[in-house]
Amino acid sequence: MPNPTIEIYHDPAALANAAAQHFVRAANAAAVERGVFAVALAGGSTPAGLYRLLAEPAWAAQLDWSRTLVCFGDERCVPPDHTWSNYRMAREALLDAVPLPPANILRIPGELAPAAAAAAYATALRRAFGLRGAGRPVFDLILLGMGDDGHTASLFPGMPALHERRRIVVASMVPDTVQPAVARVTLTFPVLNASRHVMFLVAGAGKAEKVRAILGSEGVTPGTPVREGGLRNGGRDLGRQAFPAGQVQPQHGRLTWLLDRATARQK
Ligand code: 6PG
Figure 1 (cartoon, rainbow, N blue to C red):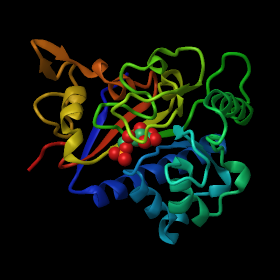
Figure 2 (cartoon, rainbow, N blue to C red):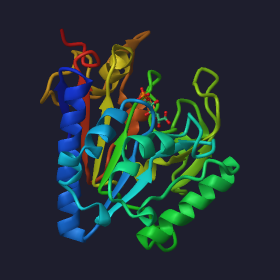
Figure 3 (tube, protein in one colour):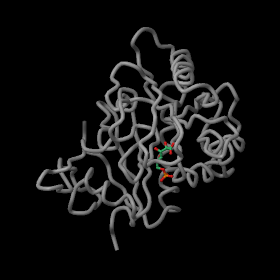
């Protein structure tokens, strides 16, 4: 896997603008090369700025939504209109504002029991990507966030989902420290690491320590080759593998980290 590209922006607004440029570029390249752009959206709060930007007419007009398949990296096990729903956040910020055919949205049915929601989503992905047997969906772009604990999607430290190597979607409980304290459904590492491009959007000083552990301990500057190791914890290097977000390493695809200055600990 090539070293990640690290891009640092002055603030979340500049980060969202850069992410929108990457999104449009990926969408148009995929539409030309394969006739469809398959993207998995991230949940949480950070990507909302990107989604709102893409919903603006000047941005929305830059890609063909009829050739876009919108999926989700993970979901909370709540109904789609629940305030905790990642789908609701994306629908309100983006999906309702762009000419996306409803059939082009693969929502994780969080209203079902977790295992049933995971199975239903996996079936929908297999159908949409025309998969047989043990095939995995290859996304053109997967957007991810990262929690203060280094989790990504709903792959949390210490949880069994981290070790899933066969299924493409699993249900997961959350550690006691994580809010909202509700079961989740998540894409697994085999899918994340099969993606043509994974783009992390990370903002806020609370994440700086984990970003440093994953991307390098001397602070993060653009173009710094990523080295294993980072934070020392009682003499033991907490390299990138120590945190789920650090285990996202696309085998053949691109990996881009978009950070704001607070996360990169730049003055
Ligand atoms: C979720 C997300 C989760 C999120 C991180 C960062 O369902 O919450 O999938 O992985 O990306 O927790 O969240 P913020 O962007 O809100 O900091």
